[in-house]
Amino acid sequence: MTYGLDAIHELIEDSGWSYPVTVTRLEREHALKNVKLDEDGRHMIMVSELFVDNDVDRFENREDLDRKLEPIIESEIRSRQVSLFGRLKQALFAWR
Image (cartoon, rainbow, N blue to C red; front, side, top):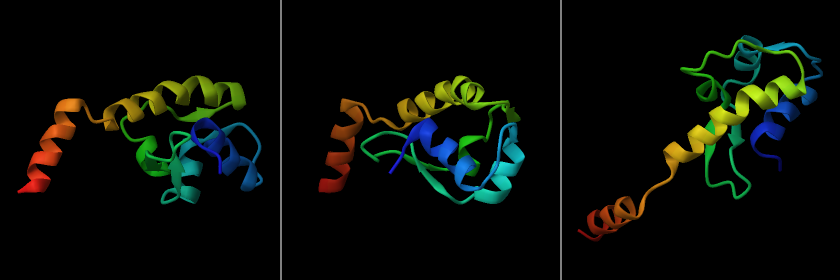
């Protein structure tokens, strides 16, 4: 299964669309589709969540998709990573 930028590109190809593709169209057709953000599959996100709070409106071609989405996906992965302190806190509260 593909992940990250390749997963979004695969959605576009599987839908039979060609570039340019609007974010509105992606959200309308694949809003609840889960996309893996990393190779391990530890971080997943729905397509509609990926574009919330981001100023992306369309992708002109594959390179444009990569350029616009790469920082968004990397930021999303970083925001979901738990620090060592966070893991200790989770373990402590799970133990109670």
